[in-house]
Structure formats: C-alpha cells, structure tokens
Amino acid sequence: MIAYFNKIYTKGSECFDRDLDGYVQNASKKFIITANPETLMIGRSDPEFDNILKRKDVTIVPDGIGVVKAGHLLGKKIAGRVTGVEIARTLFSLADQYEKSIYLFGAKKEVLHKLVKKIREEYPRAVIAGAQDGYVRDRDKVFEDILEKQPDIVLVALGIPYQELLIGKYFDRFKKGIFVGVGGSFDVLSGTKKRAPKIFIKLNLEWLYRITTEPKRIGRFCRSNIKFLFEIITIRIKRR
Image 1 (spheres, rainbow, N blue to C red):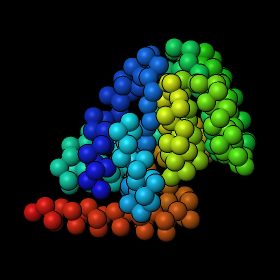
Image 2 (image 1 turned 120 degrees about the vertical axis):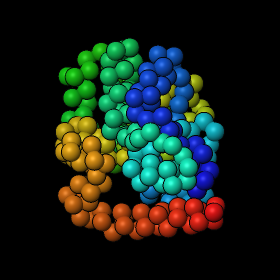
Image 3 (image 1 turned 135 degrees about the vertical axis):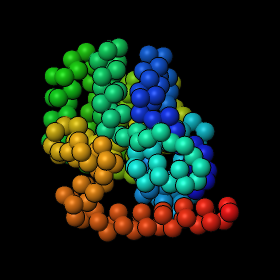
Image 4 (image 1 turned 45 degrees about the horizontal axis):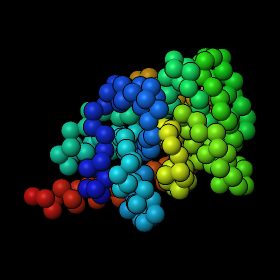
C-alpha cells in the first residue's frame, strides 16, 4: 500500500490541469490512473493490477476523498481530489484548444453516441479519431485500431481494473498519447447520468450521493472501504 501512496499525485487539480496542458501541447506519452480506495484494494489482491499501479510510467491521481484522507494519515500532504470526470473535461477543452485527436472506448452505444455528439457541439476543433462502445467482443482489436490511429488522447471507460490492464498491455507500443481509465465517467460527461450536486462535490460527499442514488453500490463500497480503512490504520499503528 505504501508503494501506491509514494506515487500519488499530491498537488491538486489546478496543478494537474496545468500538467495536462503541457502534456497535450508537447504530444507527451502518459498513463494516468484515477484512484479511489477500491482501486488500491484491487491492487492488493490482483498481482497483475499491482504491477500496473507500480509502473514507473504510471501517474496515480487521488479521485476519491478516502485516498486523500488516508494520505494525510500516512503523512502525505495531498492537496485534494483529481477526478476522472474533470480530467476528461480538461482534455476535451485542450483538444479543442490545440486541435488534438481523441479516441473514446467504453460505455453503452447510446451513451457513447450522446458523448460524441456533445464533444462535436461543445469542442468543435477537437478531432474524434474513433469511438467504440464497451460491449464489443474483441477489445484487443479496438486497441489495435487505436494503435494504428495514434490519437493524442485515449479515454477508456471499461471499469477498474479492466481499463488499466488493457492500457498497460499496449502502452509501450505507442509513441505518444495521454491514456486515462475513466470508469463510468462517460455516463456523466454525456449527460446520461447526473453528477452529484455541487454541494456534495464541495463537501467531498460525492460518494454518498452515488451510493444513495445507486443502492446496488453499497455492498461493494462498504467492503472495499472498510478493508482499506483497516489497512491504513494498521500501517499507521505499526509506524508508531
């Protein structure tokens, strides 16, 4: 667990937006993982995903407030959350500003269709290099298409850890590109699903809004977060 926190981005969303600006302008190659407690707990139980999280070329950003708070308990001064939704919005804006290309992979067909339509309307100078829903049988074939097109930005919404494992499998074969696993963000970005009200976001209670509006998440949320909290407390006690 400590190895993950040694890689966590600590400077907050405004600084990360500036970093993204530089990456896009310079056609950099970056692999970004948005992490909540569940992400890190999957890494603890899945050796392949653990290796992905520990890669030197991976940047882990604190998507969940639980990761921020845990960092503080472990002596890491993390400025705040850096969410997948906001990263995607920033990248759309930068693609529009610098006329860069985007490839979208994931979500349902109708969600993806709405998102492509929205990007074309709101970010007209951004180039849609490709868009494929997440229900395709051969995901490797999709990544071969992405590899051939070499887009500047690749957003993969297949859920953790599948999106990161797939990116990790092909990442070394790309010459450029910002790769981000964004989970269920396409639903929010397309307008299909509402994001939490601003007051929830401001108070870092977006997780509470999510589990109250989607009760099926409660079991999974509790299991991963309780285990995560227990592990963080154990590490803190051992350090004393």
